[in-house]
Image (cartoon, rainbow, N blue to C red; front, side, top):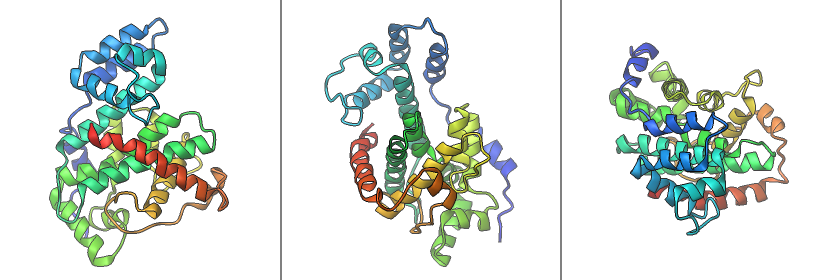
Length: 285
């Protein structure tokens, strides 16, 4: 039996979610102006010392390939470029914002959930590299936040979330299916609302809102297809856990669109695992 809670109520609940740091918008606005200098971007980031510390920790990690070599934010901007720094700031801010209020829920392992999210980001970035998709770092962000709706359900609708988790165990089904049965909406729907609330780019919004059912008619189909595939591959690799034990089939059109075949899978999975090992730095920020 479905809960009487509907998407309209969820919208009103979502407005209580912590907003991203104001520095994110400031940096995004700065980067829209062609005359912006690396020093200006560096100064904008350092207005938030906690964020600046996280950015330096990330850029000096193996994930970005400059271990221990970058001493200031301005130096990081010069070395990595505006686009990469913007994506690092966005990734760090989103991860911190979501992780801050997350807590253990019976039947839902929050640490394994975050490992699942990081692994999906790493896998999405690896897939993007494999098919020469240009926005590889945005694929990482999309993978990182693809299940944001689950955290919102866990935090803001705990009773409904408990019913969803119990239904998963009772029927041995996917969380996506349980949400539809109990709630009438899914974490995709909630995630779509959050990404709109945060004014994230449309490609990230679509990847979050449609990763279980990518549609070739969507304007940003490829990034959604990449996240769809990444999510399933890391389930098969048992990297973290998103809340259920199922491994769905990769959509046939996605498989074709990404030009995947069984011959490339062994090397692809090895590369995903290596990328995940480096990306686990996110658990330390």
